[in-house]
Image (cartoon, rainbow, N blue to C red; front, side, top):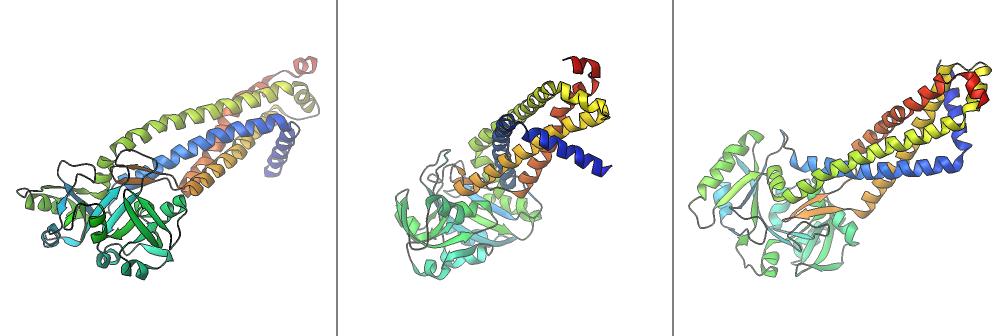
Length: 383
């Protein structure tokens, strides 16, 4: 049975090869639609990864109350010791953030000023893949640049670059399992405080690691209660909830693109169905001859379905492959209010695209296959 099916699939491929222009145009259309779908799906997957809270999440962000853009959130650095003393806090790090554009943008450069002696302890998952961590520690204007930002800007260790009025020298390129770390530049906190002209002792936020995820709510309430009567009150949220709030415009924009993805899928179904229907109408007499020499109607329908599925799978393979290569090459990031969303290609998107192509090819081919199977032999021979 399997051998018979494989022979029919081989026949379907030969039928497609016999009409190269029609086949190539159909493949191009399917690839275009699936390129768009894959890009949209990557955006959705990347967004879910940075906004959906999980049981293992243990990070809080302490921000200035009723402030949004990093330029307006100013907290005294001495809050550090007060936060550290709260029960359940495992580690805390002050961060000064400077961006070249606080609004929604595709071209965002984000500097994170941190104490050099605390970064390795707070974020041990960050690894230097090029350059030297020691060089960054010893150089006042040194920067550890995320690999996506370095790729996008063509930066290498030793290069100097300037953004948002801050000029730094690349000491190393870093890689992290946390997507946001790969799209920012870490610099020394005192250096960034002076470069941004806000003065020493002022930071944008504190990132707090708690002992367990069960401590998130309790510690957040304790921090805000501690500083409620201070001159600079705070609002504390889990990191992913903070990102979702700060990147509200991005959420709306990317939420709309979901409909674009659905439209691309419908266009692919229509394109494949139209192409296969044209194939069936153009091969009426050939199919009648095949039935005359012993091919059952089911075999004719199987060949038609196989043609549609092969077109869908091959076109999707090209479209998804090009989308993955484009996103890897460009390193696209969306930024808003100092938060960055990196569009990183993921294997799950590749596999879901391949599976979807098989389903689309099958659905689009069922109608034309039914027409080919039910057409009387005599009428076909007379056509």
